[in-house]
Image (tube, rainbow, N blue to C red; front, side, top):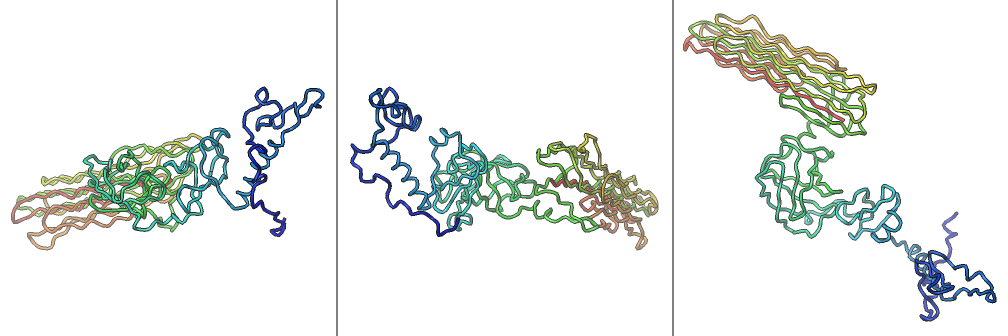
Length: 468
């Protein structure tokens, strides 16, 4: 068809000026036995209208025809004017919910809702807007004057409470923007209670849960209410650090928009969503501890611990399976008695392949640096090694100690890992802790003059970053 073929419009509905005695609304329910011969939406024109009058039939009523055509032309007129309908709960219940693709006008001026599923009975203006997508809206970027601010009074981690807002709100609606100043550090999944509306989940910009460092106490950020959650505007710390992670060959490890970081030693379970069939992983083993050194008038210095191994890659997994994640700790410091530094612990990720096979990606920890009770240790800690990664980078060896005078000795440097730096030693004192992630601690140096021994630097812990 062509635009020029558009039919004439109804400027007024049919029977617009009909007197009440010549028109009536068509009822939904059957009129059989109630008003013989009257039409209804259920029956249309009833069987009596189709029988001869001599056989007991009843002619169709002109009032019904006027009422029916008026209803039809009212809708034709509304549609010709480009009108959209508001949510109608009674209508939605009767039809079993709105169909996918339906467009409704919002009670908020300038906002139109697009339905994304069949049989949707959720009111998009009722606070959740579940399965409704905002379109054709000028409210997408609210003015700063529409930002609501208040004070967090909570003393419970992960549960921000803002009892009073300026300006106040009477209902939660999509695209409301709030300034949030957490009273406590945000260190994991967090909810926000606004006025009396109950706890609302706080999400990062990418939809993931917050992690440690994403919301330091006293530092404000903005969040927008959208589809039942508060989503942070702008990237949080954990998102910025993981937006583009490139391995040594230049290929990206980012698989999906979600990132989970594990930076404390321990064992964890990451349940993947049911739509995830691939994931990317980076794994660092723990760094080795630096060797200790005695004093007692001797010339003694410990060697540096080795850096932890690094493994990375992208892998196919069974949909909705779980990852078992182990983050290895750093090796312990060598003691002032001249003991060796402790070995760093292995970090690993175990996943299930699509065929059900279990596979482990392992990044070994660096070895501890040698300690000394006399002279410089000759045992620099070996770098960690691993297996299973598409990219594999063994850790670097810990350095050996050396002297700069008769009374001052320098311990060996701690070995580095991928994306961490070499750990420098101190002059005649305790070693430094390893560079995070997975760096080896530097060796200590005893003091010939004071006779004091020193501990080596502790190895840095491992790290696991999952993207899915």
